[in-house]
Image (cartoon, rainbow, N blue to C red; front, side, top):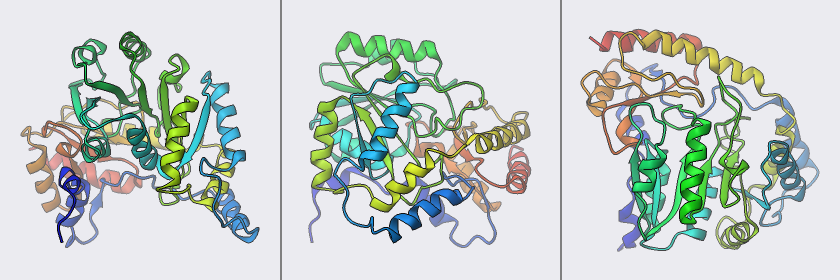
Length: 364
């Protein structure tokens, strides 16, 4: 059976390839997983159970339950984000796809700072748009002047991921202001993926959406409440964009999972500061453990750190790490370079400690 041409525009996840290489490992030191190591809060579990028992198991409105949408608009208004509308999506990944389909035509260009979350590149290619990568090495802060230099008549959107996966970088206020100035100058929308803004260690959340009305802000509950498998995200955006995304969702995902939306509503009442404090401590544990042996930038957010491989070849380094029972992810999964590798410190302290020992041994 002949497959559609678009299926050849995407590759299987490099992260999954790491898992395949490690299939025969016994008790691996796993610092590769991009999800919280803590469990879903009990109150959120109970809200889901209550929703099931109360019969809230059918389709919801395409854009999501009104109670959750209203709470999100109110929460962001308290932060200075005056979004016109919000749609509940099947995870942030579903939100990315809906946004791309709503705003990008085949042949359009989307500017993406490099390193980047792996899905951006493949979904853009899948729908026939062209990702244009702007290098942010070595400090992983986008340079607005480089972003502007990458703009062409085909440019349709600028994408930012703040805090960043895989680097853990948090963009400075000056950088964000500079990106807004560039986008406004050329009349471009900005898509900002802020799924990790619950994990900020040295600053408070700042969003481009606070200053720029042509922003699509994506976030969700996968990281803050560990609801990775429950698939609840959201997009705050101008009404016209939300309407277009809702029309596409109607004929694709239909709606985000109903029970999970009620659980997410309960998650908004959870105090996540303890988890943030825990990951700040783990960030310091991994950074202080490897900084004398690796070229590495201290991350300010998310739960990743992105060191340079000793031989400048992250691919071969990761294979050697796997041979030493350590699971990390090659930087080439997230970048047009292959010089680095990604560590997730969303793990128990004992696992991080074992990982530090192996990493320092591999540093030579």
